[in-house]
Amino acid sequence: MKKAFTLIASVVCAAMCAVTFASETNARLSRDIVRLHIIANSDSEEDQALKLKVRDRLLSAAAELDSKSDVEAMLSEYEAIAREEIAAQGRDYDVRAEYGRFYFPTKDYGGLTYPAGEYDAVRLVIGEGKGQNWWCVLFPPLCYVKGSVDSSAAKEELRANLSPEDYELISSGGKGRTPVRIKFKLVEFINSLKEKIK
Image (tube, rainbow, N blue to C red):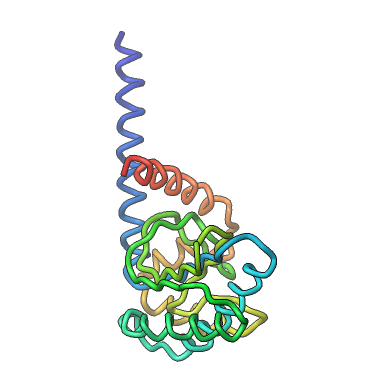
């Protein structure tokens, strides 16, 4: 009986520590970045190509962002840019841009790994929004499109905005990525459970 109780108590304690780690890690890392999530109308080849054209236009407009607050201020401009590009491609899809906190899975961006969780983000939905999506870190700019982003400058900006511990956590730091991936898979698992409960 004592062994069973000790085992259950250990599992509960480990789960509580994991939930705390997941929440604290996500809260710290999400404080200084804004992510971008573009959802295509459908999975047709044409709609997926349209999504990428809209993406390219948005990233060009976002290249000059100086702060996280600039992103939200440009929301209506992003929507207008997307509408313009959609019309230029001969489509009449509606488009909806929103700024808020949205769930993202664990993702790698040029040597940086962001854990799953909720992040401030611009979500752009094209038409029905039933197609494959595309996402990246909009600010600081870590969106890779044909080498258009100076990732070293973005990484340095991120390093300046994060604590040394948090930057080390998301970067490989030359020590291999396995421990980070294991930690973030745990974070992703805990956060996906929280998302399902909602």
